[in-house]
Image 1: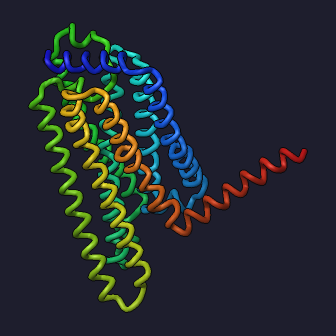
Image 2 (image 1 turned 30 degrees about the vertical axis):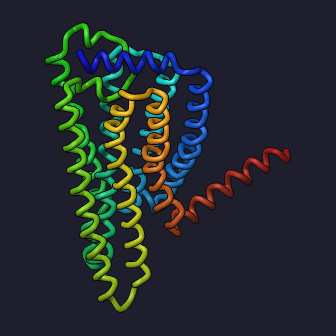
Image 3 (image 1 turned 90 degrees about the horizontal axis):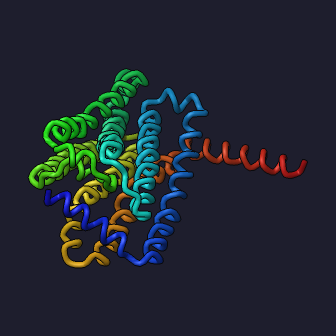
Length: 315
């Protein structure tokens, strides 16, 4: 009941906020989000058109990372638009959306860890890389990532359906994951579990970084590949850190909301733009522009698109 009241208070605060301020915040969000959506979509098209990318473990994992980021941005933007326009949705319609968003959120760091391990195998075990990193195993890893990511929201959904009252399940609300875990202790446990998982992933990536560094020092050749692998994993660590901060942000926002709603709305907007969106923008920067093969393919397909447009214009 306390969580329900807090949710209703937030809805009332959003209604009372100056419409001009709401519209400016919504416009800033769209200006910031949609360029990344278009960029990631174009990268997915580039990935799907070149067979060499679709059969390479490294690029298969990268393509999955792009798909997860695109789904996250689209769903999150939809929720933001509904929230700022104070559109309330029946809870039983919000639950599947929240489950999908939480699954996607968990998929991102697990995919990053898989990409990091693939680079470790490629650099530290080059003779076994082709045998270990196959396209079939990459697809199996992606399937396992989705299964592991879906466990937590599925369990939360079962607990919600079996324990919540009919009145609670029939209410209208904003779509946010907290509606599935109304108990404060479960919220805290979920956040703690996610942070522990992030720390484990960070430790694994740090070990991979050290092993690649040692391999680079011992190798007499291919130091360029080792150095590039270190920089790639460094960017992965930054992305994991941003994902970790993103998990902590709702707890900070709840504390701020108790004191000043205007400050809360500002903090929520900044957290969304800086951490939620930026963490999804790192993957295109890591592979899309730093990887020579993928960048060349992007330039090629972009050039073809421009040539088609110009030829249509000349007719």
